[in-house]
Length: 294
Image 1 (tube, helix red, strand yellow):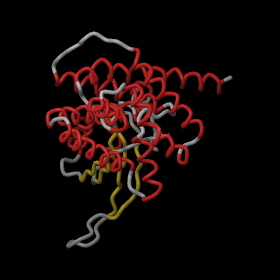
Image 2: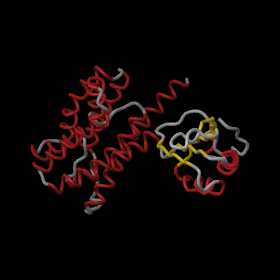
Image 3: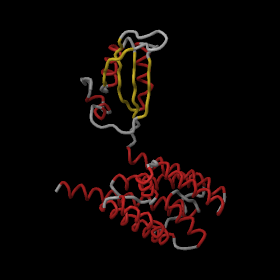
């Protein structure tokens, strides 16, 4: 029963994603001649130059990518993706929206937002709405080139062609649309929490540890290290603190550390994903006042 409910939830969310993507395309981008990246951008470009139905072109352009997906994706994901692209193409053909705005900047931003949200929700639930992601997976498996680099190279080529075939202005607005779309895809795949890891080395480490636990409520990891390698040689041992916080609390933890040791050595690094530990509980400080270290 739980498996059925989970599967149903995935399909409902994919449907929402398709609806959002179709709004971004039909209400903003298509009526104003803007492109996005990937297979969608190719379909729009061909539609403008050949005066053909965008719905048909969107599915035809996606076919080569789906063929690649047959060799690299699971059957379940491939089926979801094929159905999603087909439904998106149909929706674009039947939907009709009034003119919302003629401001090109707003069109690029909000069109990218709706399209990115739709693609992100769909990917998170196991469906691909744009074939360029499949191409990225295929190239990565074949040559070891990262998926992000492949998609970026693909879209750079697409926007250069757009500048030559249509106009530089359309290409520039399309690049803006692509940037907004990519950012919103990341938001909906990875979540809106932006985490950052921090390593702290200080003689006042014990005081800093207690303040992080009590005032921030996040867990910490403490390990020993030898400080002072270099011209002065090896000095005393140091307690090294490592923790992960939400970026919005970065300023707060800096003030906290400065109150204990203004000269503390601090290293910050981006965290792509976090699993386990007490980080999620930390997002609700009222429930994590008595946390122990990780």
